[in-house]
Image (cartoon, rainbow, N blue to C red; front, side, top):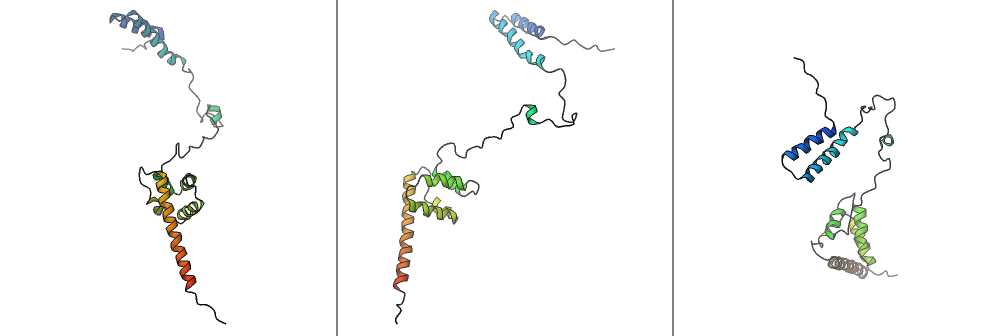
Length: 177
């Protein structure tokens, strides 16, 4: 027995069948109209598809460029690391990562007013002593308290260095001629 190829129904025939089904289900006439219109709109995309298959790159001598395909050729804009003001905890975590260190250091130094403290923090970061800074940072702690504790540690380090210098100067034997 030979199978015959069935004729493909058109959009309006499919829409009409669905509207009749809605009428048999005793739907409201407005809903039947909406079903008819929605079916026509949803099937319209099938009709609008191209009848010729798209040629591939293999068929042509030259490959199709992104410009010819309609893609943009401009580079993507770089995504910013921080969309809002980062917390101190996040900055400490980013200072440990070499790829994020410079940006995190800029954001951290922008919060500090004291020039001497900035220099001390830069030295700590360059000497890879980030844990020394991170010890003072706690979740939910205000920036002012963290900066004050860093200032106290910086001052303590300066006083011990000054005491060591003074002790070394007092213990130097005087030169007698």
